[in-house]
Length: 280
Image 1 (tube, rainbow, N blue to C red):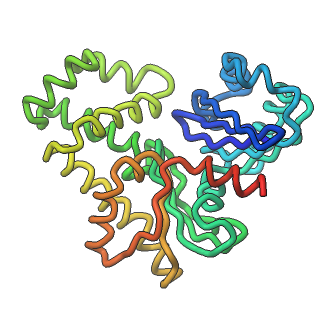
Image 2 (tube, rainbow, N blue to C red; image 1 turned 180 degrees about the horizontal axis):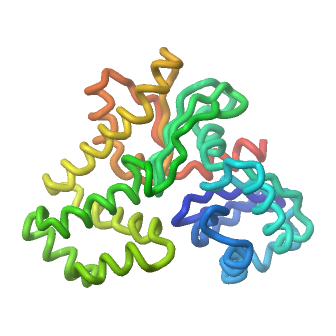
Image 3 (cartoon, helix red, strand yellow; image 1 turned 90 degrees about the vertical axis):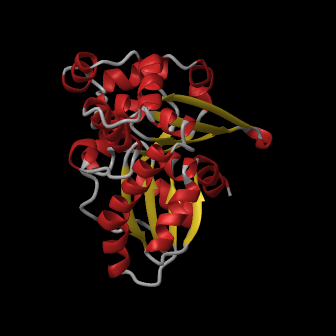
């Protein structure tokens, strides 16, 4: 058996290729070695019946996780997973590497991640070029799910949200100022909490206010990530990967047109392409 894993900070998607071509799919909470210590990671795995039943039969595992760009974090996560998948040979790379494989395969291109977090890099056909973008939900991540969650809550607290949206938020999430500030500043997994508001964006995607927030976030993303990368690598095809890119594909392409940029592909769930890449 071969398993591939693509994990953001909020969710991780697993696909297991079994004999005869059958594919088993399951999901867990996100596995990010910057936010999850080994004990927490093992607890996440131990709650998933599918992984428990197949753990001993998996021989190779390819893991692409947010927060795994540094060698020490890759090794830490590999060591942790080896305690659960005792017979598996484990290779860990960051989510940007997995996104590049999913979007470009063996070709060159510029790959942008717009999921729980945000990133971008030039892919030379073998590996992504090093960059200074992976600064996380506090210092960066413009255009990502946690960025949009932050903008939604900020506008809510500043009373800048239209009344009909405000009432929906309060009914759906039981929000008030003390609750928000407590959750953001005093409790763990803040990035997951912020990213959870992506569902509200998707449910209200036709509302003008939501569309404005999305457009503004994408413009910040292009200015911060895409334009500087494209200046270094002009003429390269541009691809996007992730839940935000997939959920707001039309608006993403509209913003790209403002910059006279053509988007070659948008892949909401890269796990399918990654499995095909490593199974063939």
